[in-house]
Image (tube, rainbow, N blue to C red; front, top):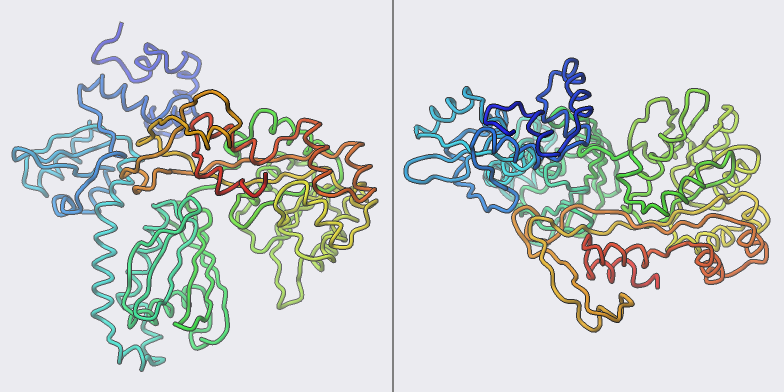
Length: 559
């Protein structure tokens, strides 16, 4: 029987969310980690954050609010300081009848509620909300306001005349300028928004800042042209680049922390007709999923992937465009392969994530350390498994292929449209057909498609054209996102990979020896159970995970 004072673990057992064994495991882990029980159960994957919140709602008789779908006013930020909101994981959400409604993850934190009461000078009404939703809400109502203020301060700081006369003295003192605050806020906001890249683009009259979120670019703010030089100079200093060089492209890298998580920033500066454009790639800030179940493999594709990784030698290639998750797939494969008795060496450009127990090398073309040169050196290091960041040229391809047929397992990426065309690409690079057929274990082609936002997902009947594209003869309900605060009005939140896996068999090897076309290889792979990218994406559309829009955009040309 459920009672008001029932412990959280027992309550979750009573409602069927967890088993007794799972609770005991979590309690044992709690003795060492000293975290709230709910956080441990969520971390183990036994319950969702929503399930914990609903249980706490019943226990404390405090209503649960879904902040992901609520529009919150930035004006509320004046009620509670940003520091207090972050320290206690709470956010003000409304003022009604002289009471301040505060969403909080831990309603029993009376110290937090007292601090809010003192700051706001109002009676406080606590409500429950998921901690992840609260953190996102903090970004929406605090950091956007701070960014706007920083932009205003920066625009006041630099006039056109000052920028045109920007001296070495100003450059040396730029660390003390308002630009530091602005650049930091932009990066923090990008990480909180799950952005993979930040684009700072000078236009003729102003400078726009765009974030790439879930593969799409969204404009976030505008900076006046006079402030552009200061922003670029600050970023160059961060990346240890030459601040005086404005005619040539430059690259840099910054390692920092955000909310206790290590973040790598790859910086690229490119001269354009309107000034220097900056792109900041964010690596590691959102964490990297190195678990098979998080890669989006279907049960059949996961089985085929296993088949590839069991090979003692040969070459496994992952293909796809830039930003399609190829590196994550490779790293996941390495973590599964890596054992104490195996020597794993990688050569990358750059080393995006550090892996324990793996010897990772970063190329340095200026010093003569290219993929080809590095691969030759690696072969003298007694490797068992080699990962090459990318096969870019014939020389690297030939060395990788020859390494794979001399007892090494080689993993790499390559830019091709699908799995079948990867074989053609190797032949075009000058690799002999017999070497390709002898060395190639298989190919994983992948793309990333956007997930429908679960907070605003709505169904609709498929029209005639959609039914035809999906190969359906009967009516079917499809899904799309209507747009809400949780997804920034886009209707999408997050991405999932779709895959096409080609496993080399006797028939495919014979076809490669005969220089078969990509279409012939594609047909043979289909006969042996291989699904195309289009077919994988279609399954996700029918399941309501993604939309027809994504199907057309990502896989139409692969039909």
